[in-house]
Image (tube, rainbow, N blue to C red; front, side, top):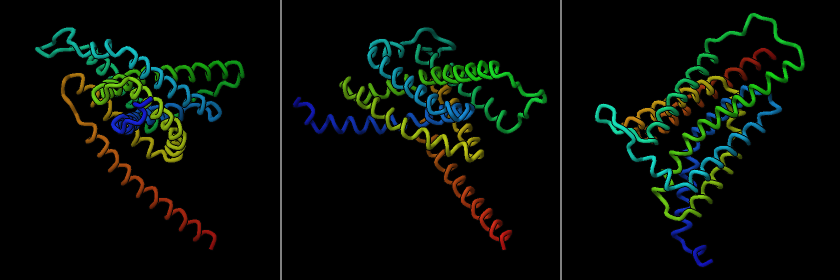
Length: 253
């Protein structure tokens, strides 16, 4: 038990937990955006399942560290560029994220409701709802694997003790579980923020694709750009709220 009083262990735990939370921001945004398409009564269940998949995939990868690190070995070469198993996961994950985020932007900005009359049969509605629910959970599970692989490789580079890695992953997922609902509710209330978050996921998809092709894009640049954009949007939201309040006061007067 003496290792519990080692300050270096606690410093490593704190740093790794903070890094896992930062790396999990894009995962939270992706989950929040997809869950927003579900009925309100099942959103919390979907969030818990999505983040549960994230934790399980990270822990499974941690328990198979030798296999994970083996993914960094080149499998074949294309135009003198070595392609490893990790590169393939990042490439397909990045392309999936690019497709999904672009599709969601189109649905949010351009798509119109179908002209056909809505289905009213309760059995068919329940069946369609179940397909949508598990379809979204499946998409979350796919992208969780991509984000988890990057997260675990980063953890291995920072800490040697497996126990510290596991504790940091569990703690970070617990924090993300607490933060996911407020973030999701905020995005749902502000459609412009939703489009901004989807644009952020497009950037993340591009970064993952570039990383697979050995073109490293520091995530700090992406997060800095997103923080600046969110700051500007926060000012716009505040400005719109003040104009609406002034309009309501004028109407009441």
